[in-house]
Length: 448
Image (tube, rainbow, N blue to C red; front, side):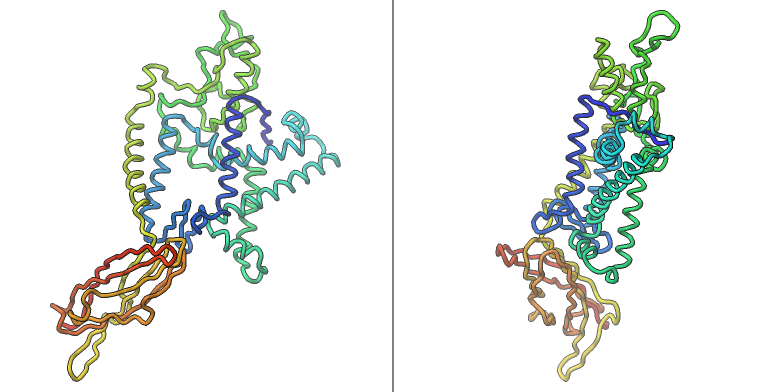
């Protein structure tokens, strides 16, 4: 049987609504806009290209992305230690889209929660069949929008538009994958819903490990609420057992039973209970942000060993990540030897020349075309020569290109079959005129 949480009004509901609007716009709009010529958010794992707010990263920048991932995980751990499952109720895309879009559609097409609960299990009428068909039509349209925006993050908006605008025969696998992804999200947002949070979500399983008795989370103040009104006994608590907190819960639990795995800290029960307490002229926050232990000062509850560990991790890895980001050069050059013969010998009447073949992996991370020039330091004096037909070369924005080249040198420069030289790479931005120079080690080998 589906859960139809009653609509609720209150300060927390209003705050969460504003957060949802921002996050929905963030997810749906960000993949389609560009900053400095790059997609604002791109995680193209297949082609090893990543773009975050105008910063372009390639495969060699994976350690930097790892730092950002570590900071994200540590940040979620820190917020969980301090405020429980606040991520699930306020920021998780699952909750954001279901509460911000799909429940609104359900309410618009089939009526409020009370009406939907009353109709649950009743025989279908033509009116209700039309309502359900219209609801699923709107569900499908919204899911298509969400699916394409999410896929644009991972395949690139330009590539995605090319796929969906072209004939099916050009990209059958990609289109089938898009359709399957859409069906999965439609099933999740339309039917699975809270069961994903309860059964499938891994975060919900280990959240208790990150919390302790000082964690501030959505809790029922049992000391103040019990015994509930209407129960036998002496002095009555503030809880009137109206069950409003149960009816508004999106996972169908009773928060008064204590901390539970199913609670996503959405604060709906807090708003519902505050409304009842206001009508009874009682203090609010019978259900509120509390901790299991109310002992100690606010500082003692906030500053705890696990919190300090998380803050130190975030400061350490975050500091390294920020430093690396702001010291990124708009280009990347990687030099490595091509597989095959380690060297070749060309004999001439006067000397014996050795050749090594290398490859230069060039990446342009800037929003402008750049010119790249290769030169070996003092190549004439040291009997070594660079053979590269397209030198200098032009590399367009956001492009990655392999550029093979040959190093030709006299056997006499070798010591024990090898020698070390330096490859000087000069880069010039063709729009701004800004120049950079990078020196790459070049290890050449030959016969002993």
